[in-house]
Length: 406
Ligand code: TMP
Ligand code: ZN
Image (cartoon, rainbow, N blue to C red; front, side, top):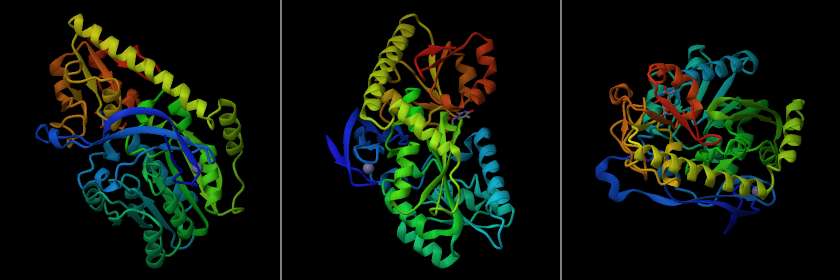
């Protein structure tokens, strides 16, 4: 299978097929099982610009419905990270007269709330009605639309050029990313920067984090593909900084060519990616083999534990849990429920695998022997919160980078 690259028009060759999958965030009620949406989840790499991407997309109206259940403020670590982001911008980028910052996919206002409190001009662009409403309650200005060239022109008209355009865990979601980058190019002030943080393709490959692959993640960015994208749309990549967030994130800083001196990290990561072969199809073929082994090992372990009469539950129901349970064919027969702190997920089923999601109180009540940590990127926070479970002899099952018990 081949498709056209969404960034450069080159040829994308398919390398990994995860089969029939639901929407990662398609948490559903039992009565809606009959009408559940499925599509073929597969990724490939562009021959020309090396951008790794989904072969097929779910229409964005289906993805970001009014009750989009992901709340960026759901983790204390994330709240702190985004507050630090805001402070960094206030101190380093928003220092001129009457500065302006726009955030694409501002979610529940977790970053912009700090900017709003500082009295700095800002605008969140957030199409999901419920989270947009949550950010308004924090005093954040929101435009309830999808960001693209047209929206960018409107924002420029109304607010003037932006000193910062920010995006976290959303830029790689946008299938019309080419139009987004053109819009940013339009909107940026001469010395403005476009800063975005997205899961790093090098992490997906390096950690066999195949659960990062789901319908919302249209692109799997690497320093090389982001640099190619920036150049194609008249911008330059100035910096690339690795972050621990979401298990392995890269934060990119882009701006108008020649306006800043690129940090040494850009050349360093490009060299590292070349060495790892991240721009070659073989990287995806290696990932395919590694994830196949995780599937076998995880399913075998769960089947064995069930046979031994052990009680196994899940912990954390991120969208990633849908990819893993569906790819590994794990249903309520092996994991009767998954604990998650997000109220809007509780009482619903994980998409496709139909494992019920329950509130954290149920964890202690059930007193399980094992818990599969689907929210492995929050391991430290969750294991600290659930110290009692481990102290009582409970064990965590992790499947990244391979299946192991701690
Ligand atoms: P994320 O990996 O997309 O941030 O999603 C993490 C999920 O894990 C989210 O649904 C909230 C849930 N979670 C808990 O249930 N308990 C916790 O302590 C943390 C940090 C997250
Ligand atoms: Zn391309």
